[in-house]
Amino acid sequence: MKTFSGYLYLTIAIAFMVLLTSCSTMRPSGNDSGGPDLEDEEVSTEEDMEALERLLTQHRSSLADINETNEELEIPPIFTQNPEDSAISNPYQGFRVQLISTRNVETADSVATEFEDWVQEEVPQYQAPTYVFFKQPYYRVHVGDFQSRSKAIGFTRLVKKGYPEAWMVPDRIDPANVPADSVSFAAEDSSETSINDYQLN
Image (cartoon, rainbow, N blue to C red; front, top):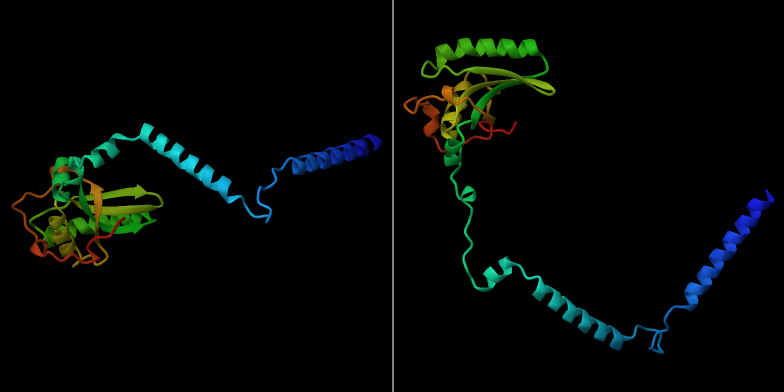
């Protein structure tokens, strides 16, 4: 026990000496008023500014050079594309209509089966395929395959007659099941899109 208390006193003594030494080595201010020495600060600021300017000159980027010469930057084509064009460039990118999202697989399967019967009677011009899949924690029922947003909106409005909770979602589609250009849905020509027609999944 004596050795522990001896180490404790020794540690306290060393810490006290370090504290005294650090206080005595502090640089006194050149200003008698106790405030900061402004002349030294101005000199160091000027030196810092010159050093910063030299550093910026050494490491100036090519982007800064282009900006100085007023050259026009070329915008990558991906940022100038129309959304409809990008859907065509990637045939698997498009839209589907989500009918339901549920934790019960039997409910999802029954809704998919009911929809297949409903769509044959109500929308004979397009027999939309149904897709039941699991995305944790829900089973979802998506129908149709659309590359065109306007066709997807028109189809969504028709589906809402039988399934009021249906909405359009972006999805990976099967290009073989996309309706032909000649297939038209009554509501697709309308330019107004309701918030209920399009919601993110």
